[in-house]
Image 1 (cartoon, one colour):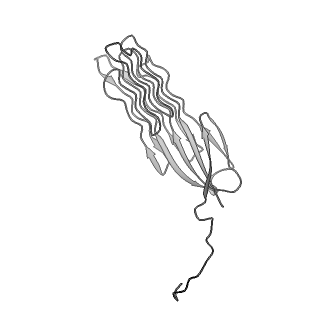
Image 2 (image 1 turned 90 degrees about the horizontal axis):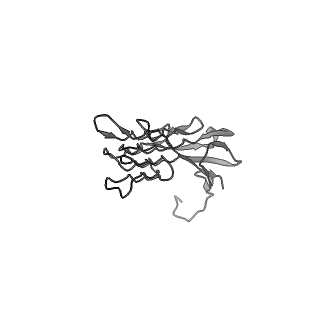
Image 3 (image 1 turned 180 degrees about the vertical axis):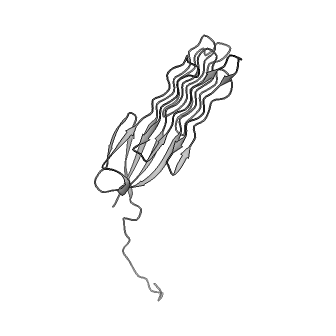
Length: 206
C-alpha cells in the first residue's frame, strides 16, 4: 500500500467473466440466453460459392463477422441463420453461398460462384463480407484461371479444382465452414460450396 506495507483486497470476479461453454450452429435455429450470462463472443461465417463446371472458375469463400456482445444486449432468444453453400454448378455464374447471421447483431454474406464468359475468360466470384462485427473479414476469391481451386473462408479451405490433364476431372466441394467449391474442366463437375456456421462463445460471472 502507500505506506510500504503488504495489504490485501477483494478482487471482483465480474470484471471479465469466465469462458464456460460454446454453442455451434451448423443449421439455422434459435439461441437461448442462459441465466448468469455476462457476454458472448460470436463468430458468423457465410456459405461458400459453388465452382463452375465445363471449364469455369472456382467459387469464393464466405465472409466472417466477429462481435463481442454484452449480456444486456442479447435478447432472451436470438434467431441464428446459417447460409447454405452454393450448389448450382452449371449456371453462369454458379450459385452463390447464403448469408449467415446472429439476430440483428452481425452477419456475413456468402461467397460468389465461379463463372465462365463467352470470350474464354474464367472468373471467380467475389468473397463474402462480414458486417456489423467488431472484426469483419472478407472471404477469399478463387484464382482467376479455369478449373481453379475455390476460395477459403476464415475457417474453411476452398475445394480443389480439376486438372487439364484429366487426373482430376471434377472439382471438389469446399472445406467446412464457408469454403468455396473448386472449378472443373470441360466435361467435369465442379464442387459445391460449404455451408456457413455460427459459433457462440459464452462467458459467465464466477
